[in-house]
Each structure stands twice: as C-alpha cells, then as structure tokens.
Length: 246
Ligand code: SAH
Image (cartoon, rainbow, N blue to C red; front, side):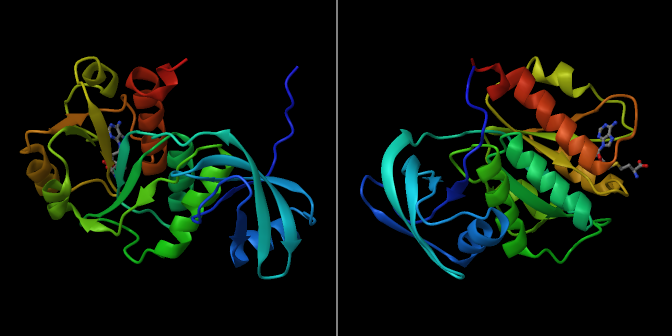
C-alpha cells in the first residue's frame, strides 16, 4: 500500500538545488506556523518550474520568515503544457472556484476577459495569483499557471496565438458539441467561457470571424459559468489532454 499522508508543498521562486539554503517569505512562513503547525526540523517539499521538486528541511521558522535547506530532488522540472482558459470573471466565490479548479485541471494560462456583461471588473490580481499558487501546491503540479491582467474581449483575438484553437462556449446556439469538435481539432487548445449574463451577439460574431475560433455547445442545458468552465476543461483533458497520459 502506498503512503497517503500528504507532505506540505511550497512554491518557491528562488533557486532550488542540493544543499541550498532557501528563504521562505511571510506567506509560506505564516501558513507553516499558524495553519499547518509546522516546526523547525520538519520536512517539506519545495518546487518551481525551473528546478523541479525537492525534499527540504525547515531550519528556522519565524513569524514572518522561515528558512529551509534543500536536500534531494524528488522530480526534475518539466513543462506542463495544457489548455488555456479565457473567462469572464465572476463574483468572488465563483471566481475563486474557477481559478482553483482550472489549476487542478491543468490549465497552462488563465485569461480574464472583460465582456459587456462581465460582473467583476476589478480583479485583485495578487489574490488571484496566490490562489493559483495554493492550488498548484495542493494538486502536486510542478508549475504555477500564469494569470494575465484582464483583456477586453475585442482585444482577445489580437493576443491569441494563431496555432491555438479557440473554442468559444456559445450557449443557445445551434453549434456542434465540444466532444464532437474535439474529435477533429489538433494541436493546442483554449476555451472561452462567457459571463453569467451570456455573451452579446456582436461579441460572439466578432470572435467567430477569426480563423482559429470555433463555437461549441456544452450539452443541452444552460450551465452556470463556473460549471461550464470546469466541465469543459475536464472534457478537454480527458479527450485530448493529459488525462490520456499513462
Ligand atoms: N444567461 C445566459 C447563460 C450564460 S451561461 C443565457 O441565459 O443565455 C454562462 C456562460 O457559460 C456562457 O456565456 C457560455 O460561455 C457558457 N455556457 C453555459 N452553458 C452552455 C452550453 N450549454 N453550451 C455552451 N456554453 C455554455
């Protein structure tokens, strides 16, 4: 039987390597002390996308800082390519849910998109970045997906790479299902999910003129935006993404 006890994982921007002393900032120090009740001498895991994942020991654990020593490497760094999620930001709890679940489902990049009916236009980027870190720590990723500053839907096309298919989740349209489309598309993918109020017709028309965009349907029911995002990512990963990897 395998060990199931999970060990604390901490994302570190500083270099990791055998014998290196690694400072941990106020965020991790607080979490280790107050939340996890860790003590000096406890073992933790440190990771980042450049150096991979390391066993480390807490050397000193203060209120606002901690330091640790890197011991041995557990996993080498490796790229974690995945779908991109472009989404109209929802209000607090639903937004948090989308960000957390998208990280768990392996997104490579999150792009908040401002549409006419977008509910939340004032994003606290620092808080969202922290959520991507927390989720990456919890789900044992080696990388933390990037979350971009919000872009206007009219500008999404200009920043979207030509070699990444943009699936546009278009409710109430007579378009093929996501599953059907995934049988024929190849290469990298992204999905765009609209706000609770839906897209405006002109927004959809504008985006769907692009050669790389394809409108898709997520089943016969109208889903809440967070359900649509999470369900679509799961289907994409299962049908063409890393859920197929052994
Ligand atoms: N208020 C809108 C529904 C918006 S649902 C209406 O009544 O028409 C929020 C977002 O989730 C949509 O913009 C779309 O991107 C996605 N979505 C929800 N259900 C969907 C479905 N069945 N097919 C495709 N996209 C869907």
